[in-house]
Image (cartoon, rainbow, N blue to C red; front, side, top):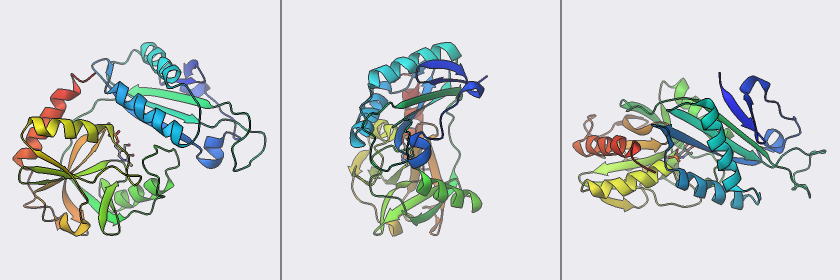
Length: 277
Ligand code: PLP
């Protein structure tokens, strides 16, 4: 059974119902988080809390993050899943009339689900490379994901696992993950900006890289430089570090093999996953 928590009430997902006048449904007016629970602990909980706070602030939605995370604790306890994926979203709630501007009185909708899930080491995969067609505020973890949805579908239709995105010839991120390049002993990733999500996994990878002797460089990456990198990978809470060995367009990345640096980083990440607060 999949459990959810809707506005503080825990119930089987089949019993949950929201009004079609919810602004999340009408406008995609809301924000979300996806978290991995590993060995009975929500991984990097404080980082997820901070990011949710910053997304809520960015869209002017006053909701107590501590209260939302109290619901996360109640739901995880109810579900009793040791390894799980937790999805949470907060929208600007139900309105009586459809109007783009915020309603004067807001009663947010807080929705959480938990399902069985284990983070596993990812096999090398192919990515398509496409212009970033999304809006320019991607640091907000918004539920308005149509651009990401279309790009991921294009990847799937091409037999690929991700879509790496670029704007003005510079890599931004991927449709559901952040992008990293390995060149010898350097780990390069685009700097944080409005154009990319500050990924929690990105944060952890940067912390870990120096512990295994990699130089971390946060600088713009030209999209046409990807194929001659020694390695390319993407990162996210649900997939960890996923190596990309083939690009379309672009062809093979480096010699098409996983680098020693990547394998060490992935091992360090797997280890950290089980010990991070
Ligand atoms: N970038 C985008 C567009 C994402 O959707 C995600 C995760 O869903 C990420 C990056 C990675 O973020 P995190 O590491 O916090 O899962």
